[in-house]
Image (tube, rainbow, N blue to C red):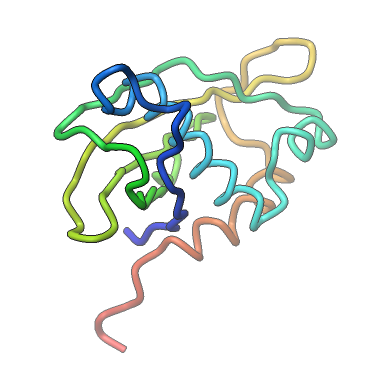
Length: 145
């Protein structure tokens, strides 16, 4: 599966007293990557709401490998797993740009609900059609071609 990449630079307010990025900022960086990817396909929260859906986070994981530090350039790689039910699962990698070292990885699952809070079990056709370009973008090119 391919990914979308977003670049950021570690800011002063993101580090602790030891000059290491505070752990909660990795989750915020996941959101930066997710919003950048979804924005390319007009699938931001306001777009979901206009279609009559919301997608709250129900599961979030982050595995820390190595700390990021002040002024380092960071790459956030974001992908989304093609759904088999009415949920979206995003996968993230945070890497140091200069050497490609994996700093953290994670996964976030959002379920799909109607605006009145009813849980969906299958993705409605209108939403499937809106999601298709996103999944096509992240699909690996056919190696047989």
